Length: 426
Image 1: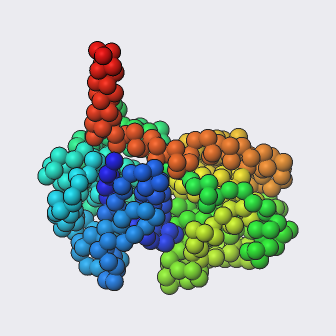
Image 2 (image 1 turned 60 degrees about the vertical axis):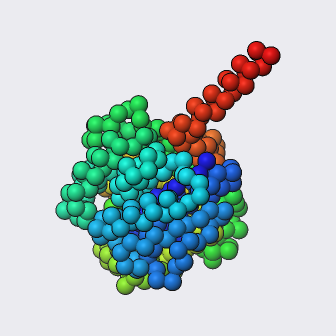
Image 3 (image 1 turned 90 degrees about the horizontal axis):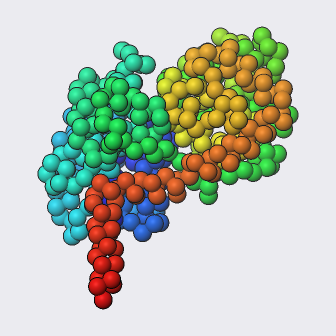
């Protein structure tokens, strides 16, 4: 098949870990890469956000089309909606100039869904949509801090009605689509996110700490991901304070993420806020900000940690718990959204309420004081990740959705039946 992956603000070429560079970038990059490995042609359409980018870049056997829409510089995703008409016009013309037609458009995020609707209306190409985050859910949790206009809700309603398939990443996503958007359950396909076993797999903890220069005798808690308030890193800092001051258990928090390789408060203002909070909690020497790290190095951090923690307010899916599980590291996660789906409570890790630092502190103490439990949870997490959440399996499922909505599956079945009928006649 020939598939167009539209991802207006999240390019597979971007370095993950920034404010607007995270799970969606990783999702699009891995789906495109796996599609190419399986013999499909996958092109990614993303907004050109740097002046020196070529129109077409190459990425792991795929093309990345850097769409000229708005100024060629980085803009917050909340400011991109006015440029989507220009984005859609370019994509439609690009499609028309191609020698072979695309079989399906897979839109990622609501603005890409808007572009996908325009393409479908202009060219009749089927549309699959993964929202990655739903506006009404975001508004519920972020309130006045939500920077997207109310116009988003009507656009999402239209995309839900116009998509041939809506990809829900977890059961909570399905429930939200039905209850908040009146989505037809028959057009929802549950397809989770994944991890790449070539990138993430178990390694010796001692050796990983040696390479990172981490002490061997510390109980180390890892937080890794985008540095934005909704990720709940302040909750983890408070939990470290409770562990060390009230529960008499020393625990160190290592925080990986940000907009620069150094833990720079100017580049990443959230770091400044969290450092101030660590001082308020009396644990500045126990909270270490490391800055952004390359994907190639992340496996070391997961393997060097005793436990991985992520307690966002809400989470459409959450890829970092999978990466930790793939490294056989136990996970403590917020009992929300996709984390509730990927982490099996009491088996591969522990689930706690978001914004509850005391509950998180008690969960940390549980794993710190019972190393055998932590090891068994890490081992069970590895099995669960490999059985349910590989990008290879995810992409196979997506490809079957593409084939169904584009009619390719039906056409191939017709050919098979015709051949069978011909053989019987002979």
